[in-house]
Image 1 (cartoon, rainbow, N blue to C red):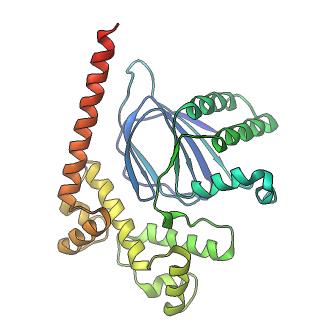
Image 2: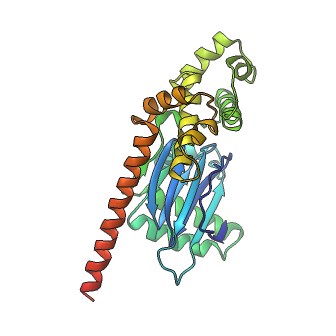
Image 3: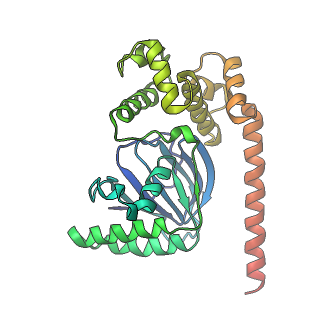
Length: 289
């Protein structure tokens, strides 16, 4: 269990770890990057992240200047109660939750209120008492009605099997090296398999080719740089593993459906509309006070 005051800044480095993570972000507005998902958020934000799922938040401002922006985070192993539990029929809802968590889940509504109360209590408990609260928290998440799975299906790669561990090693290598040239031969050597066998293995596990996955990871990173305002189109291209702007523009449109400039323009227009609506809502609410 980890609680901290958030620093309002735009992070551009994704994190990725073996543990699952439950995070509650309070009193902040910004943008989330989870797997290949990019979306704006306005606190409170409650998410569940599975193993090896890249994630990053950019914090733009606080909602209430008189309150500190806060983060509550719990890291845990999905089988902390025993792997046999997830195989029992009574734990089907929990098993399904963990399956969806591999792509990232964001919750809304009453689920946030219930989770907040449990997380705040967990801060002051230890040992078995904290474990009981953890079970209560997972129970709340399994009963949630208002939630959204965030990333594309191919990000659902975390497995405990030997093959799953090999895929995780491959993805870890790609995330660490996507800014550089990556050859099929060097990735196949990680498993290890011949290039032909690796291509069949990788396609069977992810339903994508290696080049498709590398492309989507690079473009996802480039989009994050663009929306973060830290790089222009050309800089985003060269900081994401491309050495050819024309090829970058082509791949960007294949993945995002828009050219980099039109993608950024569309996001800015949507952000302006969102801010306008929030301003109108606040003015309307003040008129009734």
